[in-house]
Length: 213
Image (cartoon, rainbow, N blue to C red; front, top):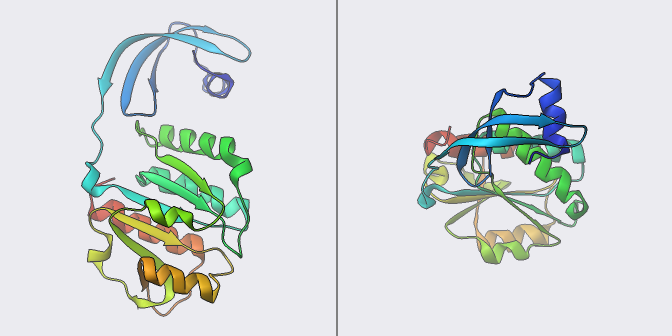
């Protein structure tokens, strides 16, 4: 069964009954299917073949933790980070950002569409937090992107790593101090980057250095 969102896409690309399509459960399995029917708000297809697609092993998993005031920028980061192979997205609320827990379904649709775009069959986990309690679930090396940190090194982005990015208005001093106790603050250099620029630069480094793209 293909839901309304997928059915609309099928109509846009002008597929018809009997056409072969690719589908996934978002957990790493690729299905080759044939379309049976296309209706107004749903479609059906028959699975002809399935294949397990192996993802990067656990030692190279990485998490992106982001806070944002503007939905447009957050949406863009989610889209690009999925394409670059992020394994887990944590969207948290800081003093200078807003809560996005009401956007859960919209974020999941962005994840789905972005994964389809790059033919990714294991979707990242998406979690929402109203504070910094997410720190307790992070495992591995934790990097905090902040202008006060030491210069970044390539080794900071290898292996299992958690990337924490602040909101447009930066962390408060209290938040920055707390994060320094739970991770390693690093800086990309002299220029002050927008938070989404720093996020994608760091995700890109992790993706490239760990063979995730």
